[in-house]
Amino acid sequence: MDVANSPALAAAVTAVTAATAATVSGDRHPNPLSSAVAAASDVATAHGSSSWLGLFARLVFWILQFVSTVLYYAIKLATISVPTLLYTLFSTSLTVTMNATTL
Image (cartoon, rainbow, N blue to C red; front, top):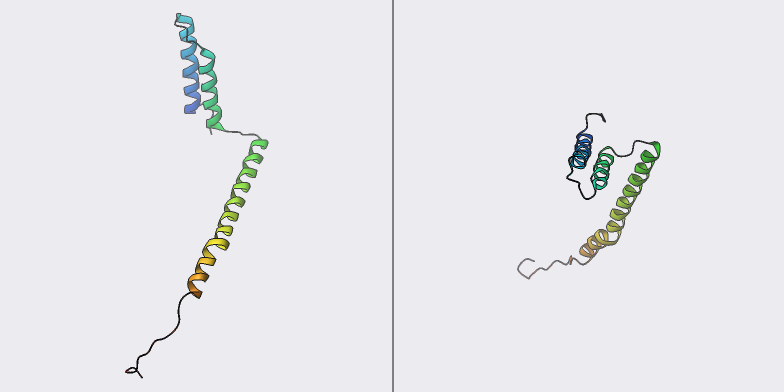
């Protein structure tokens, strides 16, 4: 992703410029640092982590999510779906009724 042309970076620059302009013009914002931190947080969120540690952490979280999803569906199948199917199959009456005229 091109960092220099990203919309999040443009928003951060605009927020910092507005905070600086408000400070210079005398319309002091109660806390210009909070708007700059919020803008920097938006940029960090938009770009994510690009380090090896961030990549490894995302990989670990993906593996944990995948394993938990597989376990959920396996346990659901083993405890709900299969017993329901077996109960329905074995509780079905397979008797044949015939009356005297059919014979």
